[in-house]
Picture 1 (cartoon, rainbow, N blue to C red):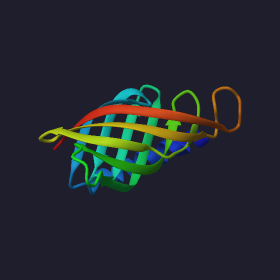
Picture 2: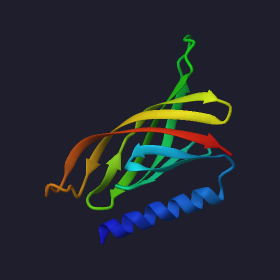
Picture 3: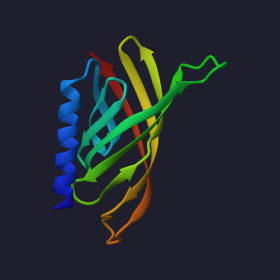
Picture 4: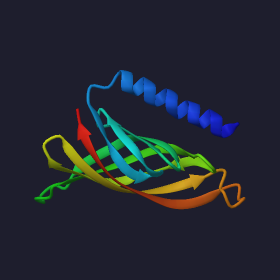
Length: 137
């Protein structure tokens, strides 16, 4: 029941955000398994993969001042739901690389609190990760 509510909430938020998005990036990533990723208005990251779905709000981002680096960093907060197990909260910390016009790649680490872990524990702490590439429309 809780998974159904979590999936419904993520879907509703994603549809609502997409309707108001001025800038949309779509691509592929490994995060909740392998799947499709999207970024809306440089603030919302979403992923639907073969292991689950996630959605994160980027609340802080910046560059590396005084350095000639092609990367920017970001910190986000969000949630996830697994198809076979688990739902929870996470705090992705990542790097974004605009390597060509309209293309970017990203890598992130996500400390996670899983409230319905597959191993039977009621709460589990994990570290997730993601790699992906997106094209801006």
